[in-house]
Structures are given as structure tokens and as C-alpha cells.
Image (cartoon, rainbow, N blue to C red; front, side, top):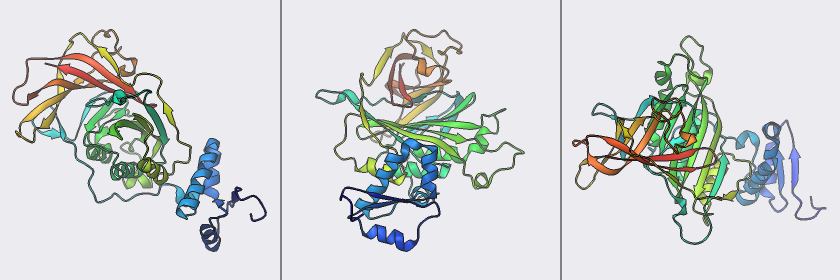
Amino acid sequence: MRRVSSHVVGVIVSVSGFTRPLVDEVGRDRSRPVLLMDHADVLAILRAPASLPGLLQNKQEHLVTHGRVHLGAAGTVQRLHRPARELPASDLMLHGQGEDALPYMSVPGGFTSAVFATSVTDIDWSFGQGRGVCLDMPVQARSTEDLVGLLHTLDELGLTSHRPTWALQQLGSSWFGIGAPALITALDEAPQRTAALGKPHHSEQLVYCDTALDGLYTLTASISAPPLPGEVPSEDEQTGRRAVSQCRLSFQLPGTPLDMTALQHLRERFGVTTNAYFRPLETTAVRITWLDQQPVEPLATIVELDPVTTTRFVVGIVIRDHYSVNGDHAVLTGWPLELQDTGFLVCALTHHHPVDKPPERYWLEAIHSTSTSDLTVTTIQANW
């Protein structure tokens, strides 16, 4: 290395691994970086050849900036123990037909590319010229424990709120909830949730939405279904872990943030080896479709406690989807294609009312939606 130009970076590939003295020596001499690639790195590149430039960049950043040698066996996400700290509890409560609050609820549904939010963040609010940007980040989460660790990491980095919304989608059925703690409960209760399903799909799809950095992001992942009665569970399944694949974060922000510390830490901690780019949006972020006061019946209500008056107000409702192709009603004019066959809809009330003073009827007013690279984030506006 001393006989070549100073900008040249060395790379050593050893399928059998490296001795500790060599690793220590590479970590000490950062003036002439030498990157080490082991068996796990080679396998990762064979699975995804396009990840090689990002992997090398990640190794160089670890070495030059932090003085750490990044190896594939150690650089992958390890199985995480659940942190002792609690995730922020939701300040909204789900109430079914009874009075008790539910951590989450079973609703009609299926596999769709939509997630419902209590409100859609409009990133075009900012003054000045130009539009917002998006950022896509594949995440190395391979088990439900990694997924829980990701939720805790997002919280530690200040990338969470009290109102994330999510759904676990199965074949012909879904489970909807508000708040990260409720999602962890639903993941833990997978065998009980799916026990009543006749022929569940071999996996369920997580769709998740939250706000951060004055914008929003979505999280998607495919999670293996728990073993059916009579099946022999694997070693991981015996401990409650299930396999996770295709885990992705997709951000939609008002612009490129000057301080990207949180995003960089997230990228490093979860072994994202592909390059990440901010890409400008070409269209208006939020689309609005006005509806003709279609009457609806709630399956559940979304309740918020007023901290000043201690009065509980209904701020939203969950209803059955009657408006898709396979619904009981005719398709409404302008109904977004992304909402076809969702099975259920989440509505935010334009005007709130006390829990003990229900109105005579509810109706739909408008659909507010925006799209990340993976999901359509939707809030349906309702009134009474």
C-alpha cells in the first residue's frame, strides 16, 4: 500500500476469516485503509451484487471514522434482547362495541399496499420553491426480535410519535392498531390471532406509518406465519421468533435535512449496505378526493382524552370497506385504486364529540392520501 497513491484503498478477501492481530493492525493504521471481507460478506454480495459499492463504503466509514473493522459476521444485525425501556404509549384508544379499550382489533382485510393514518402529514407546507424528497432504506431485520429492536432504535433516535398506525395483513383478515407497544403485543400473540383462520397464508404483511423529521415514513415487512396446529415448530419458533424478510423503510420529508445524524445511525446500526439517496418528488404530496356524504356505520371508535377537562372525545372511527370492487356497495367515483379490497377504513372526524353523546349518523367527506415508495398513506375524513 505504501508503494501506491495515497487515495488507493486496499481490500483483502478471506473466506476462512482473519486473525485477531491482523484485525487489530488494520484498525490501528487508518491512514492507509485496508478493508476486510470475510465469508459472510462474500455470501451477501452473491445474493445481491448491486450491494457491493455500498458495502465497501460502509466498511470504509466504519474504519476511517470510528476505527472499527466491519466484518460480515459481526456487521449483520444480531439477535437483540428487548430493551427494558418502554416504547411511547399511544394517546389514542381503540374502543370496539364494548366500553373496554383494545390494544388492536381484528378487521376484514387482505394484502394491500395501503396503510391508514389518523392524519396525513403534508410535506408541501414549507415555504419556498421546490418540493419534498423521499428516501428509501432496506433494513437487515431477519426475525421478529430484530423488528422489535428496529422499533426501539427508531424511538431512541427520536423518529417516533405517540400515534403510529399499523396493520398486520393476512389472507382475508387483518389486525389494526395504534401505537408501537400494541404492535409488539400483536406480534407476540400471533398464534392466538391466526388460530381461528381456516387456511392462513404462509406469511403476513406488516404495514406501518409514523411521523418524523417534519415528514412521515412507512415500514413494511413480510413475516412468516406461526406454525399451524400439529406442525413441528422450528427452534426459533419455539422461542417466539418468526422469520422476517423484505423489511424496508421509506421516508417522505419536506427536504433534505441538514442534520442527518439519526438517519446515519439508523443506517449503520441495521447494516444497510446499499447507497441511500434523497430523491425529489415531482408531484404534490397529498391528494384529496371529495366524497358525497356517504353514510357509514362504525366498527370501532378512536378515543382521545382531553387532559384539561378529562373528557373523552371520539376523534375517529373504523368502518367496513363497502366501496371497493368486491364490496357490498357500488364503487364511488374517484375512489383510489390503492384502497381496493382493504376490507376496512380508518376515518378521522372533522368535528369531535364526547363518547357519551354519540351522533345519529356518520358520513364520509373526503379522502386524503400520499404515497411513499412502498405504501399509500391514507386518512378518510368523516363527519356527523
